[in-house]
Length: 569
Image 1 (tube, rainbow, N blue to C red):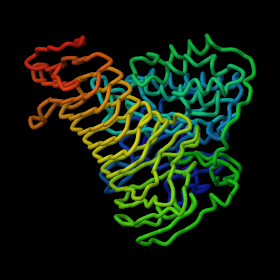
Image 2 (cartoon, rainbow, N blue to C red):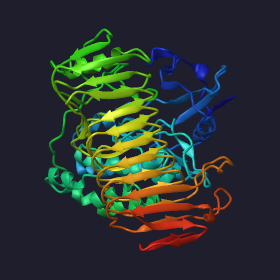
Image 3 (tube, rainbow, N blue to C red):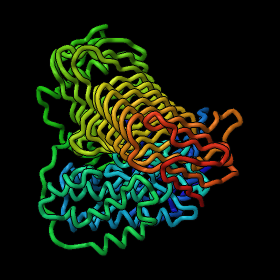
């Protein structure tokens, strides 16, 4: 299948350069006019969406010139896209962890809103789902939004995303499977980007700290707007891009934004192609200088061994990289090590024991630094008297992602959210962040959880200390024990998801034991959409507080000493 805009013929172009090195992304040059276009191979199921974008032209959207299907044996279809070539800088390079002028920030964010509004105005609406600075190019003052690989059409009856897409730090909570993406998902990302342009940081939840850094009061002037954009609950965000645009325009002022102290960004190595910024898949090729090498960050290599001793960040990361898939090793610290501005990724079945006899391992997420910890299908355990801590001097979105893993950590302090799926997690100390979201996992915490607990289904969770905010229980088979108090509400949320409950799905029963006090209320939510969920009479929820069973919901009867709310459409 071939579908091109009028007047475009790929046969009129020749390969100018292969910017990917493997034929995945090419720059083509017209044989007569020297005009440049970008040709990419897309390995997604978005062929219909890209075909729809061919007929969409707007100055703030990179134009899709055509699509062409590929003949291959892959189960996931691949196709070529031909796209507009854009000369300019990405917003990521422009910000570089430093604020930009307020007048410029407002101008560009309104152009981003305009681009997204064009997508949302389609029938059905198109959600971009990956709006971030690296997907935005500034060309002679004009903002262009690109990279539609994660985009999707809105499905009105879908209540949860079936494919998790997006970039940590900019992706809204619903993109992690909490609910379905809709136009408000893009509004969340725009709020994060607006804060980053005004301050240089992505600290969307630590507004008080940003106020202190913002000596001229520019961030404070738009603080309420950014807060409304980045609410965890989509229902509390702006309902549409047009509403957001009106609020920004209303608040617009023309004074110059003063500079604030920012953390230096690690520059991205660039490929120089005819002095242009080349659009690549999935990122852009950016002209940049090599980062300054210091004793701490000079790249090193290590040979794999059963025991590897390390004394610097570079040596630690080299040791992790040296582990073969499914390999087993002990990494012994000669002294305490801080991992800063680097990703710690363990995802190939590695079995790592951290020997912390001689020091602590601290993974530090500086504001805007972009450090993340990803553990997938692997094991990390600790021995010795030292600590393995994940720390955040800011409030970056994703501190930890763990799936199909065995993981032991001392403390996780200062973040917004961690996501745990089919994982055994042991925490020797405290969890000090906003949201713990978990599914089908076993979690044991020796200390306190200061934030909110979202337990989706089939979890065994024991927190020996207090839970500072709400406990939300979704679906079924959650067994939760809290050794101390619960500072918020207990919410049984049986809102239906996108799938029909199979016949062998476990009985919808949760058991929650609180050894201390409940300071909030007990709330039950059911939208009663009987076409995809069982009747409310099927629920059997048990809550025991301080040794006494206060609530039992069974056979559509609710009794207890606490105020209870029934919420229904």
